[in-house]
Structures are given as C-alpha cells and as structure tokens.
Length: 285
Image (cartoon, rainbow, N blue to C red; front, side, top):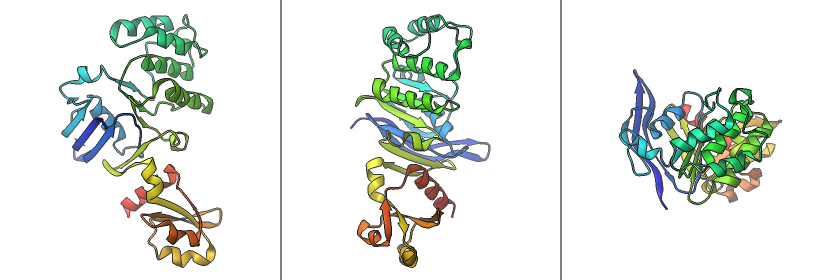
C-alpha cells in the first residue's frame, strides 16, 4: 500500500502553546480519513502544515515531498476545499472555469462542465448571485475536475442545509473517489460521514488520541446497554465510559471480548461521535 502522507514528531507552537505536540500518523492511498477533534484541537494546523501553509517542526512528507520546500510540486496533485469557498464574486461561472483552466495543467474543463450540468449552477451566473450551497457545488466541480491524488476537505459543508450536505458527499463518492485517490476530511457533523470513512483519527490538545481503521473500530470497541441487574458486573470489566441514555446505563468497552459483555445487555458497535466523546474524556481524566 502506498503511503501518501507520513508525519513523525510533527509539532507547531504558537508562543508557549502547542497546537501540534509531536504527532505521528500516516495516510495511505485509496482511503477516506476523518480527522476529528474539538475546536482548537490542532486540526486546522495539521492541514496547514500538510498543505505547506505554515512552518512546523519534525518530519512531514506529502507525496514524498517536504511541504516547507516543495509546496508547488505537492499542489500539482493535492486539492483543497475549506469551509468557505473563496472565489472572486465578480466572476461569472464560465469565466471561473476559464481561469482555472489557464492556471492548472491538470484541470479538465469538460469534466467540470459535466458535473455542473447536474446542478442548478448556470454558466452565465455571477458568483455573487449564487447561494452558499451553489458556490460549494461550483468549488467542488473545479476540484473534482483536477486529476489530484489527495483531496483535503476542511469542514466543507459548514453552513449548508442537509440536502446540499448529502449531495456533496454523494458527489465525492460517485464522481471522485476511487482506489487511486485519497480523501482527508475534517467535520463536526461526524454522524453524516462515518458511513463513508475507512479510517478515523481523533485529535485533542495537539495530540492524536486514536488512529484506527473503521474495520478495527468494530473489533476494538463495544457499546453495551447494560441490564439494571448487571451494572456491577459491567463496571468490574473496566469500561472507558458510562453514560445514561433514556434511563439505561450505556457502557463503552475497549479490547474486551464480546463473550464477556454479551451477557450484560444489548451489544452494538459505538458511533464515531460517542466514541470520540469517550476517548476525549478518558484522556482528560
């Protein structure tokens, strides 16, 4: 498997505060990786380092290159969508396509036009006349028409209604992603994307607290709605969290065999959001 991103001892300090604190991780080709963390956890700093937009300490390789010195080469094969698509508002849509065609050697204009034909974005419309959802669709069309190996999405659907959010991720999966391309996405709407992720990384206070494939998540973690008469037995197994959900005690276990927890109550794989909260609380304890 080809490694597209490799970080070792990645650190970034602002004054005396560590935005990234000796982070190690790698991202393989053909994966969809969710970088999940609270505000101020280090997500944006990590993305900026990866994109060559900030200095850092440690070693970071993106497509085998150092973003500090080789950003131009890296960005030939990396695309980026932020929470606000910064496009010149005075341009018309067709002028934007012409502009990108002249700037990026790997831009396929006909592919962008084909994608936009499925939307309500018209070629003669000014960007200033488009809704935020339509601007996001335009930005997505531009990005998906570039033959990039790595797509970085930073809160790409922030502020969009649920219809546009679902259309966005459907387009990413149907028109962009394949085994040769990789997606790194940050979002607060974890529940909406966990079904498309192949891997998750939890980050808090500049440190990675979990880095695991979704396949391993289901094997490593179990959530149990414990029967009232089995609470003491459940606690004796050392759960990483215990919460009250609609009057039932729900326990989260890590590396505890299913045969041990099955007699306690209803067993299921935890959702990513619940797992994230539990791991962050565990780190803070």
